[in-house]
Image 1 (cartoon, rainbow over the protein chains, first blue to last red):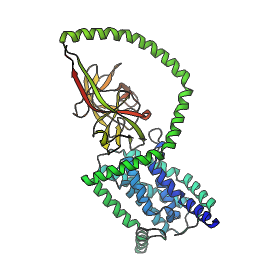
Image 2: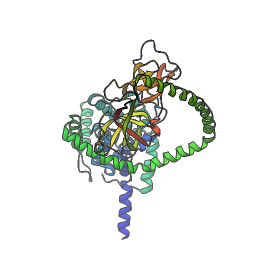
Image 3: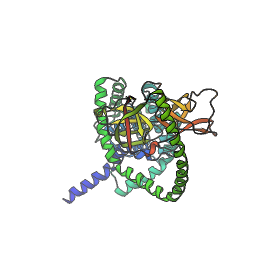
Image 4: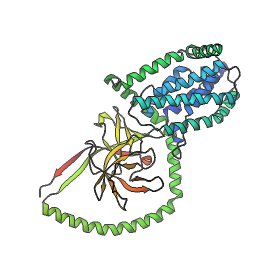
Length: 171
Length: 286
């Protein structure tokens, strides 16, 4: 029984970043932080990038794809737009993970620029060319900028979380 | 040089094809699936549309439930803010009430005059909108979208393009219809464009969403000047929206040198809306 409780607790704690990602995609959470017509950030990118870089088994590419589809439904984008952008952010993170031996906040933060720019570019390109929706590139640029600026703050939170629960890496 | 290119190729290939201990799909497979889903969705095939409609309905319901704690927090915040500014608002309302009393006398005179004129032309046309009440399940205010999801869909005879009112004023139109839910695109959304008429001169213009609080007026006549009490109504020129629905008041933004419309109904404060299903015209015999 004690083992079961421990296994459940560990499983739950490992699933928490994924649950957070699903909740952010399905709820109105991320749209609550839109101020002064310029401030917005993409928390999904931060979560995906950080956890793919640290431990891909926490999120899983299948769930990232699913979260992308949910996000598309909620934001009324053509299905697959966010899924593609999330997967490309994951690709950048997976590449950095394979290419680097020892990662620090600064290496993560620097390479995150490519992740966030590629992710937002894919969204912008697909919407601009394949849908009737209008989207301002300035908004995307500000979104990329604030997502990049806020990365270290969330990096700190996630590092702390990892240390607190003492996560083991499976991959 | 070639070694570093090889390293890049190996790392990318590994990132695309590698599957972890608990991963069922590789990134490469999922990217291909995403492209396939995207292509099918943009092709606008009828079966895909129906499928998407059901997915939308399901996701919207779950989303409405999961976002209720956030909604509750927002509602509490706005409730507290309202209470803080209660005294100030009371003072403002007193002044407005005095103004309205004066206007009531004026209106009463105009009503009498109008009735007499109608008697002269023997025409008493009474037009009302046939509306359907709906509850806002969730609203989105983001850099990409200013829209809301309502709990009525094609099962309640809602169709694309229908006007949506809040407190009798236009707030947006229907842009997506599912079986039990629909999406309203607010007037201030970047994608919103509707033909309008400005009273009292009857100037025609296009009301365009700017992604900000107030939509702007475009394609105005060259000699257009902003004056007091200029109201904006739907012109119905697009053949979709019914004409004569009130929208807001004309304002000039001197800083940005553009003409805006202050909406009568704030899209961010909407909980219930009325979807205009049609217009009933009764001609009373005199």
